Amino acid sequence: MIRFLRHFDPHRVRLLVFDLDGTLIDSRLDLIHSVNAMLRHIGRPELDGDVIASYVGDGAPALVRRALADTDDEAFFRDSLEYFLGYYRLHKLDHTTVYEGIPEALAGLAHSSNGVQRLMAVLSNKPVNPSRLIVQALGLGDFFVSVYGGNSFTTKKPDPLGVLTVLQETGVAADETLMIGDSSVDVLTGRNAGLWTCGVTYGFAPHTLEEVPPDVLVETPRELGELLS
Image (tube, rainbow, N blue to C red):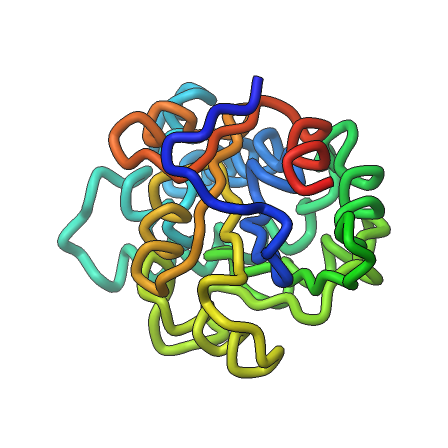
């Protein structure tokens, strides 16, 4: 069910900025396996998958720090991060899939009900190279004018720099843009840039959307398409 928490007119939206993990793709298993491979490598016990999934959203360095229980040993942290990134680079598409209904929703979202073409972009906190490779490999590349990652800019979400860059590149106003994601990080990013925000409850961190409510909530990719049809 689509739930508006703050009213806005979806038909005025001309730019959609999507989160990646937990919003467009289900990368949960590959991230879990990569973190646990890192932990095995350094001689630590594996973590429960739900715990690891709850650590996702703020980028690879934050994910690794949380998995290491916020170690103060920076050399140890850097070595662990390097191993995680190397393992994930090789295994990022072992189990990762596009959420059911996303390709159809994106195809419909490219055109608004009044015939105006919408632009779409991806802004992830995952490093940019695997983000772009995953988007291309899963057949989503043609939908997006740009795909940016957590190392594309000097700051990550929820800092608005990435979104503001997309606005500048596309020439679309903030009040004509919708940020779409599965966590409070995405909602805060949208708020910080003056965008409308949409939370998807099928992703990794729906509980965080209760802490930082978006303007509208959708439960499925299909509802996302209906919201903007």
